[in-house]
Image 1 (cartoon, rainbow, N blue to C red):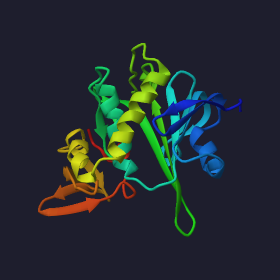
Image 2 (cartoon, rainbow, N blue to C red):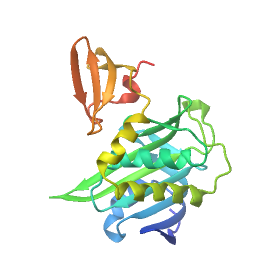
Image 3 (spheres, helix red, strand yellow):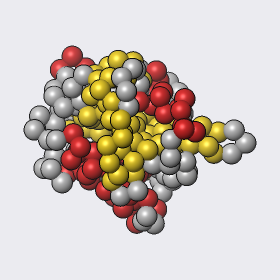
Amino acid sequence: MDEIKYLCDILDFHLYHVRSIGSTNTFLKENYTKYPDRTIIWADIQTNGRGRYNRVWESNDDYIFSILFKENYSNEIIAPLAVVRALKSIGIDAKIKWPNDIYLNNKKLCGMLIESIYSSKHEATIVGIGINKNDKPEVNGIGINKDIDYKDLITKVINNYNDLINDNFDNYIDEYIDNNIVINKEIIYQNDDYIVTGITKKGHLLIKKDDIIKEISSDEINIKEAMKN
């Protein structure tokens, strides 16, 4: 791993940069006590990155950063919404694929890994964000495909993250729901076919089969594998 260097503060977030690292999320999980709240680690190259369900995310040309929070926020809602707002501000009409992937033209543009650390109480949460810079046809991925400065894009995400943290949950949950692409999609859950009918104010998925409606959390289903179309 290369040397991690402090760059600047963005609002009350502390931005660090490293040229190459195994995983920004793993590093912060292992070193969260050594860094202040709202530390951001931005990497040019990630050699052993992780996604949800232990998927590998290796990259040498994407926008990769992880944020350390020592307070407990609604990150599953805030993180994707902050990224969507930032992308819309540069002319990219991205949407959320519940719970927190970002899609454009039915292709994945951004993935997230949100991990919390508990002992007797909440100690920290690390929010890992990876935005494709260029298309990745081998994994049905799409990129920003614009010449956007790395620091400028991170700054846009952080500014929106800060706005959402300081807002009332009820003020932005509807925006999260409205920006989701899973509603009215067919999925398979526990070997049965369902239709996604909505998302609750808690961010849970509502699915329906005949007259039966179920409410499920992101821990109960792998939406990527469950969706039929």
